[in-house]
View 1 (cartoon, helix red, strand yellow):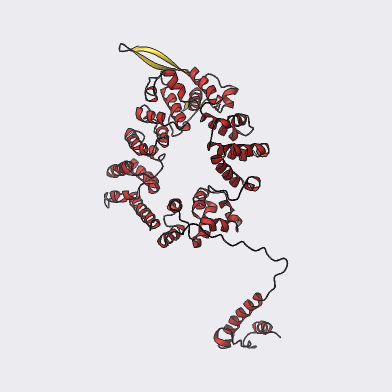
View 2 (cartoon, rainbow, N blue to C red):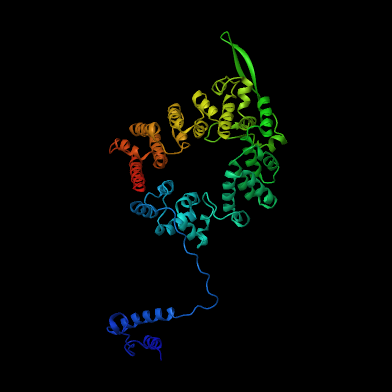
Length: 503
Protein backbone atom coordinates (compact mmCIF):
# COMPACT_ATOMS: atom_id res chain seq x y z
CA UNK A 1 0.00 0.00 0.00
CA UNK A 2 1.35 3.42 -1.00
CA UNK A 3 1.62 6.38 1.33
CA UNK A 4 -1.28 8.04 -0.52
CA UNK A 5 -3.50 4.95 -0.04
CA UNK A 6 -2.64 4.86 3.68
CA UNK A 7 -3.68 8.51 4.05
CA UNK A 8 -6.94 7.85 2.17
CA UNK A 9 -7.69 4.92 4.52
CA UNK A 10 -6.95 7.06 7.59
CA UNK A 11 -9.27 9.73 6.26
CA UNK A 12 -12.09 7.22 5.66
CA UNK A 13 -11.78 5.45 9.00
CA UNK A 14 -10.87 8.52 11.04
CA UNK A 15 -7.57 9.41 12.65
CA UNK A 16 -8.81 8.02 15.98
CA UNK A 17 -9.08 4.54 14.46
CA UNK A 18 -6.22 4.71 11.94
CA UNK A 19 -3.22 6.94 12.61
CA UNK A 20 -1.75 8.28 9.32
CA UNK A 21 1.86 7.30 8.70
CA UNK A 22 4.43 9.96 9.52
CA UNK A 23 6.20 11.79 6.69
CA UNK A 24 9.41 13.37 8.00
CA UNK A 25 9.49 15.86 5.06
CA UNK A 26 6.01 17.24 5.94
CA UNK A 27 5.51 20.42 8.05
CA UNK A 28 6.21 19.53 11.67
CA UNK A 29 8.31 16.53 10.71
CA UNK A 30 5.40 14.08 10.89
CA UNK A 31 4.58 14.95 14.49
CA UNK A 32 1.62 16.56 16.19
CA UNK A 33 -2.17 16.17 16.10
CA UNK A 34 -3.31 13.28 13.88
CA UNK A 35 -6.05 15.16 12.02
CA UNK A 36 -3.89 18.21 11.37
CA UNK A 37 -0.98 16.05 10.34
CA UNK A 38 -3.25 14.13 7.92
CA UNK A 39 -4.27 17.31 6.14
CA UNK A 40 -0.74 18.73 5.95
CA UNK A 41 0.69 15.49 4.61
CA UNK A 42 -2.19 14.97 2.16
CA UNK A 43 -1.47 18.41 0.69
CA UNK A 44 2.19 17.52 0.32
CA UNK A 45 1.39 14.19 -1.33
CA UNK A 46 -1.13 15.82 -3.73
CA UNK A 47 1.49 18.26 -4.98
CA UNK A 48 3.99 15.44 -5.35
CA UNK A 49 1.51 13.32 -7.37
CA UNK A 50 0.56 16.17 -9.73
CA UNK A 51 4.15 17.17 -10.29
CA UNK A 52 4.88 13.68 -11.54
CA UNK A 53 2.05 13.50 -14.09
CA UNK A 54 3.07 13.14 -17.73
CA UNK A 55 1.01 15.35 -20.12
CA UNK A 56 -1.28 13.39 -22.39
CA UNK A 57 -1.67 14.13 -26.10
CA UNK A 58 0.41 16.51 -28.18
CA UNK A 59 2.74 18.88 -26.40
CA UNK A 60 1.40 22.44 -26.20
CA UNK A 61 2.87 24.99 -28.56
CA UNK A 62 5.55 27.05 -26.86
CA UNK A 63 4.62 30.65 -26.13
CA UNK A 64 6.92 33.19 -27.73
CA UNK A 65 8.91 35.16 -25.20
CA UNK A 66 7.94 38.76 -24.60
CA UNK A 67 9.88 41.21 -26.78
CA UNK A 68 12.49 43.49 -25.28
CA UNK A 69 11.06 46.92 -24.47
CA UNK A 70 12.50 49.91 -26.26
CA UNK A 71 10.93 52.50 -23.92
CA UNK A 72 11.66 52.91 -20.21
CA UNK A 73 8.95 52.30 -17.62
CA UNK A 74 7.47 55.25 -15.76
CA UNK A 75 9.18 56.30 -12.50
CA UNK A 76 8.34 54.39 -9.35
CA UNK A 77 6.13 57.15 -7.91
CA UNK A 78 4.16 57.35 -11.15
CA UNK A 79 3.70 53.57 -11.17
CA UNK A 80 2.36 53.72 -7.61
CA UNK A 81 -0.11 56.42 -8.63
CA UNK A 82 -1.25 54.32 -11.58
CA UNK A 83 -2.08 51.50 -9.17
CA UNK A 84 -4.16 53.95 -7.13
CA UNK A 85 -6.00 55.14 -10.24
CA UNK A 86 -6.72 51.58 -11.40
CA UNK A 87 -8.07 50.78 -7.95
CA UNK A 88 -10.67 53.53 -8.41
CA UNK A 89 -9.08 56.72 -7.08
CA UNK A 90 -9.72 59.57 -9.53
CA UNK A 91 -10.33 57.01 -12.28
CA UNK A 92 -11.40 59.75 -14.73
CA UNK A 93 -7.79 60.91 -15.06
CA UNK A 94 -6.61 57.54 -16.41
CA UNK A 95 -6.67 58.60 -20.10
CA UNK A 96 -4.65 61.71 -19.27
CA UNK A 97 -2.12 59.66 -17.29
CA UNK A 98 -1.67 57.24 -20.21
CA UNK A 99 -1.41 59.97 -22.84
CA UNK A 100 1.03 61.98 -20.71
CA UNK A 101 3.22 58.91 -20.18
CA UNK A 102 3.23 58.10 -23.91
CA UNK A 103 4.02 61.73 -24.79
CA UNK A 104 7.13 61.48 -22.58
CA UNK A 105 8.27 58.26 -24.26
CA UNK A 106 7.42 56.15 -21.19
CA UNK A 107 5.44 52.95 -20.84
CA UNK A 108 3.17 51.28 -18.31
CA UNK A 109 5.03 48.99 -15.87
CA UNK A 110 4.52 45.31 -16.65
CA UNK A 111 2.83 44.61 -13.30
CA UNK A 112 -0.03 46.98 -14.13
CA UNK A 113 -0.73 45.63 -17.63
CA UNK A 114 -3.31 42.93 -16.73
CA UNK A 115 -5.53 45.34 -14.78
CA UNK A 116 -5.16 47.99 -17.46
CA UNK A 117 -5.97 45.64 -20.35
CA UNK A 118 -8.97 44.31 -18.47
CA UNK A 119 -10.30 47.84 -17.99
CA UNK A 120 -9.89 48.53 -21.70
CA UNK A 121 -12.04 45.49 -22.46
CA UNK A 122 -15.14 47.33 -21.23
CA UNK A 123 -14.07 50.89 -22.12
CA UNK A 124 -13.59 51.37 -25.86
CA UNK A 125 -12.69 55.06 -25.52
CA UNK A 126 -9.69 54.08 -23.42
CA UNK A 127 -8.18 51.67 -25.93
CA UNK A 128 -6.16 54.09 -28.09
CA UNK A 129 -4.54 55.56 -24.96
CA UNK A 130 -3.70 52.06 -23.70
CA UNK A 131 -2.21 51.15 -27.07
CA UNK A 132 0.11 54.16 -27.00
CA UNK A 133 1.40 53.56 -23.47
CA UNK A 134 1.42 49.77 -22.97
CA UNK A 135 4.72 49.09 -24.71
CA UNK A 136 5.66 45.95 -26.61
CA UNK A 137 4.87 43.68 -23.70
CA UNK A 138 1.30 44.98 -23.59
CA UNK A 139 0.73 43.89 -27.18
CA UNK A 140 2.45 40.55 -26.51
CA UNK A 141 0.22 40.00 -23.48
CA UNK A 142 -2.90 40.93 -25.45
CA UNK A 143 -2.08 38.21 -27.97
CA UNK A 144 -2.17 35.58 -25.20
CA UNK A 145 -5.75 36.42 -24.16
CA UNK A 146 -8.61 36.73 -26.66
CA UNK A 147 -10.41 39.14 -24.30
CA UNK A 148 -7.56 41.60 -24.77
CA UNK A 149 -7.04 41.10 -28.50
CA UNK A 150 -8.75 44.47 -29.08
CA UNK A 151 -5.38 46.08 -28.37
CA UNK A 152 -3.86 44.86 -31.62
CA UNK A 153 -4.76 47.57 -34.11
CA UNK A 154 -6.34 49.84 -31.51
CA UNK A 155 -3.55 52.39 -31.74
CA UNK A 156 -1.74 54.15 -34.53
CA UNK A 157 0.29 51.04 -35.44
CA UNK A 158 -1.75 48.05 -36.70
CA UNK A 159 1.08 45.63 -36.01
CA UNK A 160 2.45 43.39 -38.75
CA UNK A 161 3.08 44.11 -42.42
CA UNK A 162 1.02 44.11 -45.63
CA UNK A 163 -0.58 40.80 -44.63
CA UNK A 164 -2.71 42.77 -42.14
CA UNK A 165 -4.89 43.97 -45.02
CA UNK A 166 -5.60 40.38 -46.07
CA UNK A 167 -6.03 38.66 -42.71
CA UNK A 168 -6.46 41.31 -40.01
CA UNK A 169 -9.57 42.31 -38.08
CA UNK A 170 -11.51 45.37 -39.17
CA UNK A 171 -9.76 47.55 -36.58
CA UNK A 172 -6.32 46.41 -37.71
CA UNK A 173 -7.21 46.91 -41.37
CA UNK A 174 -8.49 50.43 -40.63
CA UNK A 175 -5.28 51.20 -38.75
CA UNK A 176 -3.19 49.83 -41.63
CA UNK A 177 -5.13 51.80 -44.25
CA UNK A 178 -4.86 54.97 -42.15
CA UNK A 179 -1.10 54.53 -41.86
CA UNK A 180 -0.82 53.94 -45.61
CA UNK A 181 -2.98 56.97 -46.45
CA UNK A 182 -0.48 59.15 -44.57
CA UNK A 183 2.44 58.07 -46.75
CA UNK A 184 1.11 56.34 -49.89
CA UNK A 185 -2.50 57.44 -50.45
CA UNK A 186 -2.57 56.07 -53.99
CA UNK A 187 -1.45 52.63 -52.78
CA UNK A 188 -4.11 52.69 -50.06
CA UNK A 189 -6.79 53.54 -52.62
CA UNK A 190 -5.66 50.68 -54.88
CA UNK A 191 -5.80 48.20 -52.01
CA UNK A 192 -9.32 49.26 -51.12
CA UNK A 193 -10.47 49.14 -54.74
CA UNK A 194 -9.28 45.55 -54.93
CA UNK A 195 -11.62 44.38 -52.17
CA UNK A 196 -14.32 47.07 -52.20
CA UNK A 197 -17.07 45.01 -53.83
CA UNK A 198 -16.66 42.19 -51.29
CA UNK A 199 -16.58 44.32 -48.14
CA UNK A 200 -19.73 44.60 -45.97
CA UNK A 201 -21.27 48.07 -45.67
CA UNK A 202 -20.02 48.81 -42.10
CA UNK A 203 -16.47 47.96 -43.19
CA UNK A 204 -16.75 50.06 -46.34
CA UNK A 205 -17.82 53.03 -44.22
CA UNK A 206 -14.89 52.55 -41.85
CA UNK A 207 -12.40 52.19 -44.71
CA UNK A 208 -13.58 55.17 -46.75
CA UNK A 209 -13.39 57.36 -43.65
CA UNK A 210 -9.59 56.90 -43.72
CA UNK A 211 -9.53 59.04 -46.88
CA UNK A 212 -9.64 62.09 -44.60
CA UNK A 213 -5.88 61.46 -44.40
CA UNK A 214 -4.03 62.57 -47.52
CA UNK A 215 -7.25 63.66 -49.26
CA UNK A 216 -6.67 65.07 -52.76
CA UNK A 217 -8.29 65.39 -56.17
CA UNK A 218 -6.79 62.00 -57.03
CA UNK A 219 -9.49 60.50 -54.79
CA UNK A 220 -12.35 62.30 -56.56
CA UNK A 221 -13.39 59.50 -58.94
CA UNK A 222 -13.44 56.91 -56.16
CA UNK A 223 -15.51 59.15 -53.88
CA UNK A 224 -17.90 60.17 -56.65
CA UNK A 225 -18.59 56.48 -57.33
CA UNK A 226 -19.17 55.97 -53.59
CA UNK A 227 -22.03 58.50 -53.73
CA UNK A 228 -24.04 55.71 -55.40
CA UNK A 229 -23.07 53.05 -52.84
CA UNK A 230 -25.87 50.98 -51.34
CA UNK A 231 -24.66 51.82 -47.82
CA UNK A 232 -26.13 55.04 -46.39
CA UNK A 233 -23.13 55.71 -44.14
CA UNK A 234 -20.75 55.18 -47.07
CA UNK A 235 -22.64 57.73 -49.16
CA UNK A 236 -22.68 60.26 -46.35
CA UNK A 237 -18.96 59.97 -45.62
CA UNK A 238 -18.13 60.23 -49.32
CA UNK A 239 -20.18 63.43 -49.67
CA UNK A 240 -18.57 64.92 -46.56
CA UNK A 241 -15.11 64.21 -47.95
CA UNK A 242 -15.93 65.67 -51.36
CA UNK A 243 -17.22 68.82 -49.67
CA UNK A 244 -13.73 69.28 -48.20
CA UNK A 245 -11.98 68.82 -51.53
CA UNK A 246 -11.03 72.11 -53.27
CA UNK A 247 -11.64 72.17 -57.00
CA UNK A 248 -13.94 69.15 -57.12
CA UNK A 249 -16.95 68.74 -59.40
CA UNK A 250 -18.96 68.17 -56.22
CA UNK A 251 -18.03 71.64 -55.00
CA UNK A 252 -19.10 73.14 -58.33
CA UNK A 253 -22.49 71.43 -58.11
CA UNK A 254 -22.99 72.76 -54.60
CA UNK A 255 -21.83 76.24 -55.57
CA UNK A 256 -24.39 76.30 -58.39
CA UNK A 257 -27.18 75.38 -55.97
CA UNK A 258 -25.94 77.92 -53.41
CA UNK A 259 -25.76 80.78 -55.93
CA UNK A 260 -29.40 80.11 -56.78
CA UNK A 261 -30.23 80.57 -53.09
CA UNK A 262 -28.06 83.60 -52.27
CA UNK A 263 -27.82 86.57 -54.61
CA UNK A 264 -26.35 90.04 -54.20
CA UNK A 265 -28.68 93.02 -54.13
CA UNK A 266 -28.24 96.75 -53.73
CA UNK A 267 -30.33 99.25 -51.81
CA UNK A 268 -30.01 102.77 -50.49
CA UNK A 269 -29.80 103.17 -46.72
CA UNK A 270 -29.31 106.66 -45.23
CA UNK A 271 -28.42 108.03 -48.62
CA UNK A 272 -25.72 105.44 -49.21
CA UNK A 273 -25.78 102.44 -51.50
CA UNK A 274 -25.51 99.18 -49.61
CA UNK A 275 -24.91 95.60 -50.75
CA UNK A 276 -27.19 93.05 -49.13
CA UNK A 277 -27.96 89.37 -49.56
CA UNK A 278 -31.24 88.11 -50.98
CA UNK A 279 -32.11 84.60 -49.78
CA UNK A 280 -34.41 82.12 -51.48
CA UNK A 281 -34.19 78.66 -49.85
CA UNK A 282 -34.69 75.65 -52.13
CA UNK A 283 -38.32 74.84 -52.96
CA UNK A 284 -37.78 71.20 -53.85
CA UNK A 285 -35.54 68.30 -52.92
CA UNK A 286 -34.44 66.41 -56.03
CA UNK A 287 -32.44 63.25 -56.64
CA UNK A 288 -29.28 65.23 -57.27
CA UNK A 289 -29.46 66.85 -53.82
CA UNK A 290 -30.10 63.48 -52.22
CA UNK A 291 -27.11 61.94 -54.04
CA UNK A 292 -24.86 64.79 -52.90
CA UNK A 293 -25.70 64.22 -49.24
CA UNK A 294 -28.39 66.83 -48.60
CA UNK A 295 -30.91 64.89 -46.49
CA UNK A 296 -34.66 65.18 -46.88
CA UNK A 297 -36.61 65.83 -43.67
CA UNK A 298 -40.10 64.43 -44.28
CA UNK A 299 -41.48 65.76 -40.98
CA UNK A 300 -41.39 69.31 -42.33
CA UNK A 301 -39.34 70.64 -39.43
CA UNK A 302 -36.91 69.41 -36.82
CA UNK A 303 -35.32 70.73 -33.63
CA UNK A 304 -31.74 71.96 -34.02
CA UNK A 305 -28.95 70.78 -31.74
CA UNK A 306 -28.75 72.75 -28.51
CA UNK A 307 -32.50 73.39 -28.51
CA UNK A 308 -34.24 76.46 -29.83
CA UNK A 309 -37.09 76.87 -32.31
CA UNK A 310 -37.66 74.12 -34.87
CA UNK A 311 -36.02 74.59 -38.24
CA UNK A 312 -38.18 74.40 -41.33
CA UNK A 313 -37.38 71.91 -44.06
CA UNK A 314 -36.40 74.56 -46.63
CA UNK A 315 -34.16 76.28 -44.06
CA UNK A 316 -32.55 72.92 -43.27
CA UNK A 317 -31.84 72.34 -46.97
CA UNK A 318 -30.33 75.81 -47.22
CA UNK A 319 -28.00 75.16 -44.27
CA UNK A 320 -26.86 71.86 -45.74
CA UNK A 321 -26.16 73.33 -49.16
CA UNK A 322 -24.18 76.25 -47.72
CA UNK A 323 -22.25 73.91 -45.42
CA UNK A 324 -21.10 71.93 -48.48
CA UNK A 325 -20.33 74.89 -50.74
CA UNK A 326 -16.72 76.09 -51.19
CA UNK A 327 -16.35 79.31 -49.20
CA UNK A 328 -14.47 80.93 -52.07
CA UNK A 329 -17.87 81.10 -53.78
CA UNK A 330 -18.86 84.04 -51.57
CA UNK A 331 -15.67 86.05 -51.69
CA UNK A 332 -15.86 85.82 -55.49
CA UNK A 333 -19.58 86.62 -55.66
CA UNK A 334 -19.46 89.67 -53.38
CA UNK A 335 -15.89 90.76 -54.12
CA UNK A 336 -15.22 91.17 -50.40
CA UNK A 337 -12.99 89.44 -47.80
CA UNK A 338 -14.68 87.00 -45.37
CA UNK A 339 -14.84 89.45 -42.46
CA UNK A 340 -16.93 91.85 -44.60
CA UNK A 341 -19.06 89.14 -46.22
CA UNK A 342 -20.28 87.84 -42.84
CA UNK A 343 -21.36 91.36 -41.85
CA UNK A 344 -23.52 91.96 -44.92
CA UNK A 345 -27.21 92.42 -44.11
CA UNK A 346 -29.40 89.47 -45.04
CA UNK A 347 -33.03 89.52 -46.11
CA UNK A 348 -35.77 89.00 -43.54
CA UNK A 349 -35.05 86.30 -40.96
CA UNK A 350 -32.77 84.14 -43.09
CA UNK A 351 -29.51 85.55 -41.72
CA UNK A 352 -29.33 82.93 -38.98
CA UNK A 353 -29.57 80.03 -41.44
CA UNK A 354 -27.02 81.60 -43.80
CA UNK A 355 -24.43 82.18 -41.12
CA UNK A 356 -24.92 78.74 -39.59
CA UNK A 357 -24.32 77.28 -43.05
CA UNK A 358 -21.14 79.35 -43.42
CA UNK A 359 -19.94 78.32 -39.97
CA UNK A 360 -20.38 74.65 -40.78
CA UNK A 361 -18.58 75.13 -44.08
CA UNK A 362 -15.66 76.83 -42.30
CA UNK A 363 -15.50 73.90 -39.89
CA UNK A 364 -15.66 71.23 -42.59
CA UNK A 365 -13.18 72.98 -44.88
CA UNK A 366 -10.91 73.95 -41.96
CA UNK A 367 -10.83 77.55 -43.21
CA UNK A 368 -9.19 79.68 -40.51
CA UNK A 369 -9.94 82.93 -42.32
CA UNK A 370 -13.68 82.34 -42.32
CA UNK A 371 -13.62 80.95 -38.79
CA UNK A 372 -11.84 84.08 -37.60
CA UNK A 373 -14.32 86.32 -39.43
CA UNK A 374 -17.36 84.58 -37.96
CA UNK A 375 -15.91 84.62 -34.44
CA UNK A 376 -14.89 88.27 -34.60
CA UNK A 377 -17.87 89.58 -36.52
CA UNK A 378 -20.19 89.33 -33.52
CA UNK A 379 -23.02 88.33 -35.87
CA UNK A 380 -23.55 84.86 -34.36
CA UNK A 381 -23.60 85.52 -30.63
CA UNK A 382 -26.92 83.64 -30.43
CA UNK A 383 -25.25 80.49 -31.84
CA UNK A 384 -22.58 79.70 -29.22
CA UNK A 385 -22.27 76.03 -30.18
CA UNK A 386 -21.60 76.79 -33.83
CA UNK A 387 -19.00 79.39 -32.87
CA UNK A 388 -17.34 77.18 -30.26
CA UNK A 389 -16.86 74.46 -32.88
CA UNK A 390 -14.92 76.98 -34.99
CA UNK A 391 -12.29 77.43 -32.27
CA UNK A 392 -10.66 74.17 -33.36
CA UNK A 393 -10.01 75.66 -36.82
CA UNK A 394 -7.98 78.59 -35.50
CA UNK A 395 -4.20 78.42 -35.03
CA UNK A 396 -3.29 77.33 -31.51
CA UNK A 397 -2.14 80.79 -30.43
CA UNK A 398 -5.56 82.27 -31.25
CA UNK A 399 -7.86 79.68 -29.68
CA UNK A 400 -7.74 80.68 -26.02
CA UNK A 401 -8.20 84.44 -26.60
CA UNK A 402 -11.08 83.71 -28.99
CA UNK A 403 -12.67 81.37 -26.44
CA UNK A 404 -12.42 84.08 -23.77
CA UNK A 405 -14.12 86.59 -26.08
CA UNK A 406 -16.82 84.06 -26.85
CA UNK A 407 -17.47 83.48 -23.16
CA UNK A 408 -17.98 87.23 -22.72
CA UNK A 409 -20.45 87.36 -25.61
CA UNK A 410 -22.67 84.59 -24.25
CA UNK A 411 -22.57 85.74 -20.62
CA UNK A 412 -26.08 86.40 -19.44
CA UNK A 413 -27.57 84.69 -22.51
CA UNK A 414 -27.19 80.96 -22.88
CA UNK A 415 -24.40 80.51 -20.37
CA UNK A 416 -20.75 79.51 -20.75
CA UNK A 417 -21.31 75.77 -20.47
CA UNK A 418 -22.58 75.51 -24.06
CA UNK A 419 -19.29 77.05 -25.19
CA UNK A 420 -16.84 75.32 -22.88
CA UNK A 421 -18.13 71.81 -23.50
CA UNK A 422 -16.90 72.24 -27.09
CA UNK A 423 -13.48 73.63 -26.14
CA UNK A 424 -10.94 70.81 -25.63
CA UNK A 425 -8.30 71.07 -22.95
CA UNK A 426 -5.99 72.11 -21.64
CA UNK A 427 -7.63 75.32 -20.47
CA UNK A 428 -4.68 77.51 -19.53
CA UNK A 429 -3.70 81.17 -19.38
CA UNK A 430 -6.52 83.68 -20.01
CA UNK A 431 -9.05 80.90 -20.64
CA UNK A 432 -8.29 79.26 -17.29
CA UNK A 433 -8.65 82.65 -15.60
CA UNK A 434 -12.03 83.18 -17.30
CA UNK A 435 -13.26 79.77 -16.12
CA UNK A 436 -12.19 80.54 -12.55
CA UNK A 437 -13.94 83.92 -12.75
CA UNK A 438 -17.12 82.22 -13.97
CA UNK A 439 -17.04 79.75 -11.08
CA UNK A 440 -16.29 82.52 -8.56
CA UNK A 441 -19.16 84.71 -9.80
CA UNK A 442 -21.60 81.80 -9.72
CA UNK A 443 -20.43 80.77 -6.23
CA UNK A 444 -21.00 84.31 -4.99
CA UNK A 445 -24.58 84.46 -6.31
CA UNK A 446 -25.32 80.76 -5.70
CA UNK A 447 -28.86 80.66 -7.05
CA UNK A 448 -30.33 77.31 -8.00
CA UNK A 449 -29.30 77.92 -11.59
CA UNK A 450 -25.77 78.80 -10.45
CA UNK A 451 -25.54 75.58 -8.41
CA UNK A 452 -26.36 73.55 -11.51
CA UNK A 453 -23.82 75.49 -13.59
CA UNK A 454 -21.10 75.02 -10.97
CA UNK A 455 -21.73 71.26 -10.77
CA UNK A 456 -21.68 70.77 -14.54
CA UNK A 457 -18.74 73.11 -15.15
CA UNK A 458 -16.62 71.53 -12.41
CA UNK A 459 -17.20 68.09 -13.85
CA UNK A 460 -16.09 69.38 -17.24
CA UNK A 461 -13.12 71.30 -15.84
CA UNK A 462 -11.63 68.50 -13.76
CA UNK A 463 -10.05 67.00 -16.91
CA UNK A 464 -9.46 70.18 -18.94
CA UNK A 465 -8.54 72.98 -16.57
CA UNK A 466 -4.84 73.67 -15.99
CA UNK A 467 -3.94 72.12 -12.59
CA UNK A 468 -2.26 75.40 -11.64
CA UNK A 469 -5.76 76.90 -11.30
CA UNK A 470 -6.26 74.96 -8.04
CA UNK A 471 -4.53 77.73 -6.07
CA UNK A 472 -6.89 80.38 -7.44
CA UNK A 473 -9.95 78.24 -6.78
CA UNK A 474 -8.79 77.64 -3.21
CA UNK A 475 -9.12 81.39 -2.71
CA UNK A 476 -12.90 80.99 -2.76
CA UNK A 477 -12.60 79.88 0.85
CA UNK A 478 -14.31 77.19 2.94
CA UNK A 479 -17.77 78.36 1.88
CA UNK A 480 -17.18 77.17 -1.68
CA UNK A 481 -19.66 74.57 -2.98
CA UNK A 482 -18.69 70.92 -2.65
CA UNK A 483 -18.28 70.62 -6.42
CA UNK A 484 -15.53 73.27 -6.31
CA UNK A 485 -13.82 71.48 -3.40
CA UNK A 486 -13.87 68.23 -5.37
CA UNK A 487 -12.49 70.04 -8.43
CA UNK A 488 -9.59 71.43 -6.39
CA UNK A 489 -8.78 67.92 -5.13
CA UNK A 490 -8.78 66.56 -8.69
CA UNK A 491 -6.59 69.38 -10.00
CA UNK A 492 -4.04 68.81 -7.24
CA UNK A 493 -4.09 65.07 -7.94
CA UNK A 494 -3.42 65.77 -11.64
CA UNK A 495 -0.66 68.24 -10.80
CA UNK A 496 1.16 65.66 -8.66
CA UNK A 497 0.54 63.01 -11.31
CA UNK A 498 2.19 65.02 -14.10
CA UNK A 499 5.13 65.99 -11.90
CA UNK A 500 5.78 62.33 -11.05
CA UNK A 501 5.99 61.46 -14.75
CA UNK A 502 8.70 64.11 -15.17
CA UNK A 503 10.91 62.82 -12.34
